Image (cartoon, rainbow, N blue to C red; front, side, top):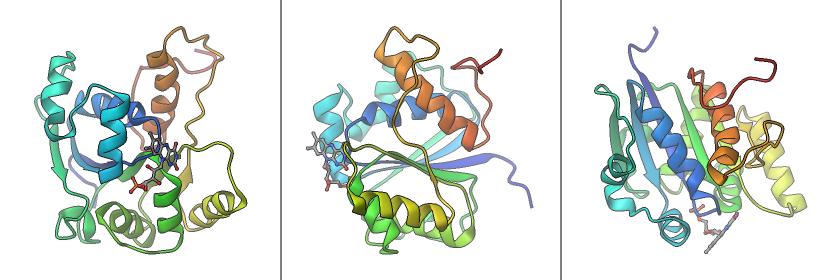
Length: 201
Ligand SMILES: Cc1cc2nc3c(=O)[nH]c(=O)nc-3n(C[C@H](O)[C@H](O)[C@H](O)COP(=O)(O)O)c2cc1C
């Protein structure tokens, strides 16, 4: 049965690059999409360090930044330890989950099949229910363990979409660079967008 409205789970972890998660939220909430947001406790700290965002009232910040929220968009935010929340259950049907940015800790936890918090559990559910799971890892350099974990989650059905922006459209700002990644994320969860041209357009 097809979902009437798209529901996307977005998780923001404590890797550098909270801006990817924030930009993704903006893009999703400009469409009639239900967004379920989980920010890890490290994700909150890194976001506060790297951006002006306060994780408690993210919607107000998005509005202040002039995001044109779609009237049918919905944002629900959960605590990372709320294992009673809907994304923790396989019976909650949705269109996919994106972890952007994804830390090596969360990557490793998912690869090990440990569902310790709501982010890990929701990702674990995606894999067992064969729903799209996009991880946007950020680390440099990558150890053998990181690479093996990426292989493991890929074999289990996830997509590794590294936070490595492209330069072929000659971006001039950080925002344009970030958009090159967010555009690929949207492509992978089948959401139409015009934030970056397609090559050859
Ligand atoms: C400023 C800052 C930047 C960090 N950047 C990264 C990073 O790019 N990649 C990474 O894997 N971990 C990074 N870390 C470490 C993670 O925050 C740490 O491993 C944390 O436990 C991840 O928890 P989480 O996956 O639950 O969010 C960073 C930490 C800090 C304080």
